[in-house]
Image 1 (cartoon, rainbow, N blue to C red):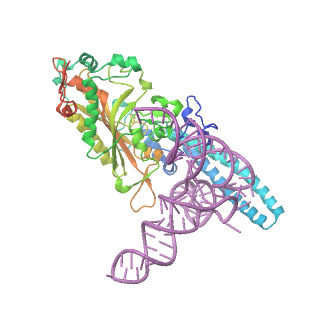
Image 2: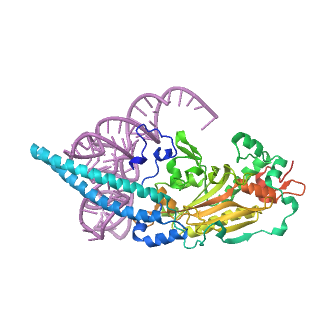
Image 3: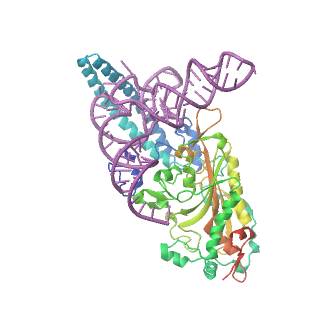
Length: 458
RNA sequence: GGAGGGAUGGCAGAGCGGACGAUUGCGACGGUCUUGAAAACCGUUGAGGUGCAAGCCUCCGGGGGUUCGAAUCCCCCUCCCUCCGCCA
């Protein structure tokens, strides 16, 4: 792990991989895939990863390097045992005054030490290579996840409240036009402040944005503990959830302080239990958080640049759970149902997609996407992605629980999803509820959050 | 930001170069006693790696160094506490 440590001065060196050397380091040797499973059950791991359409070269490499690493480590340990024995001998001889013999033993120990050093260097190098590979290998998909090559293959599980014939001309106006006309969205000045793909809500637009978060929090407060987490986090925190090392370009970095802006509250919420052993009685543990989210959208520059469809900073309410493996499938259903419930309460048509193996995120075991229909832009907008990570994140983050009666702690399963993401829902609302006179009549569920306003006019 | 003090097993707290993976107390667990419980007494009790196993190895906040040998000595970092400065 020597290469991961801070340099002698402790100052993070700049450069494309500066965070590799930073405070808090990347986590220690914490693979995402169970290395033991790679050893004992290689074929099934390979088959699982193949379903994602993944290249298996890295996995093969891991298997081979691991074999060599273990052999070297065993040899090194044997030499270490000898050194210990010989050193003990030295102590005894010195006490007995047998100086000459002691010196001979010292020489012997010294040469053993050189051999140990060589073996250890080699074994550590291999271990590091294995770790780097393992951190980049994605999660294995659930057997229930549908097969497919990409987003075109995601089955639509259900569509709720959508009637393509039901829309009138006055709803076919993009939210940015209505927003500017009503003075509730000020994109022009947002660009002046922060550049393209930033947004600014004003007046009732801002109240609506905040009200949406409040609504989402209130709807889940029956079972979820509200958390207000930090939104700047260490590299190690971003690694635990899987954003690093592979997706460093997608996040905003505050280099001089080795901090990153969170892309989602999933990041701090998941790390809350990092390096802890939870009581089984406390599971499932449900948490929710409102937070701003920051995304560089590096891979999608130039796409969806108009309006609120894709922005660098937005507000979101995230719901998350730690669960036992047995509880996880039901928890996935619960999170989906909760996210759906909020969309339904807002009266927005939506559909549910079962994400196929080829479109699953790197750390996802199974995912469902929720999309709302926005008539003004005539598109389905992804507003929530609810995912089950199996033990992938828990392994990286070292989150465990002790099954009752068991001696050995096991990794928990993590699940999370957006309860509500503001900009796209805001857009869909403004388009869906636009009246013939250009005002926006908001659904009743929001009224308690709008200070008495029910219709946003000029 | 400056100056001092600290970080050891679930907790408290010893150890300051060799018999220390770590005294002890509390807690927890098992047992004896008891109608039951308490008390008392006896015993067990950190984590991880590797191996069929016996075992061996690693871990005293993290990293590096000195040494035949480091929890113990040296250097760097992080975090916590106290004081000063600054501050929503």
